[in-house]
Image 1 (cartoon, one colour):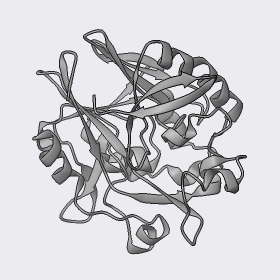
Image 2: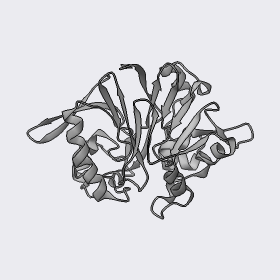
Image 3: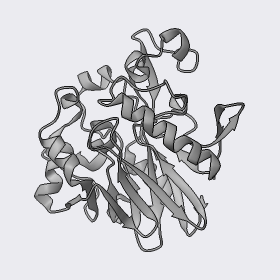
Image 4: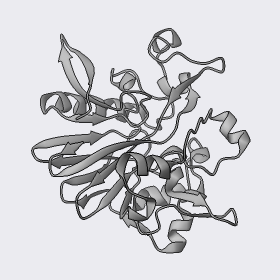
Length: 280
């Protein structure tokens, strides 16, 4: 789709599954299962909706999905149902190859956001999937990934960023920065200490990516906060602050983990927020 001066495409990676209770925190199953029916293992279906931005000069990816370096055991645990490699989706949807990407932005380095940073080479070693790209990650997130918290240690896999250090492609960024004119990346405490959200302003329009602070459209109601969040009270305060602004300013919102409608606009009726699916 055309978004202001840029072309923007959603590149879904692959379906995977996580525990529904963990994804909805204190919200009882009797409520969340109405919108996210769980399987026999209490897991709900999710996706990873990476964002491609073509500025005419740069070809940018925000997030790279879960990657393709998983063992069969891990694939079973996470219910990964890959139909095609990410590179194939990129070619089919965006019309470019991994070699064409010039900038990769990771909001954080959890495996479901940064797993596609690297692929296995002929010797089964992790290597950059986007060989000509600068990979942008906040300096504090990199430090956290190297020495993670006990509660999120399992989400950080060094093969997703260490090869980028070795190749010289990894760039440590400030807490808040502008990747290109109009594309801002900002640290918001909640899901973790150092995760970032992003905002693209172009042609008088705003596209906003919540990353894991509001992972699916079903997390828009204020109490619906993932149990994975290290700072759920801060997540709540973020939602109270940002969602009214999204309604008032008619933002196009990207829900990274939504299975079927990653792009929505928000409306408010009688104090209740509603997600209206849209393609542009």
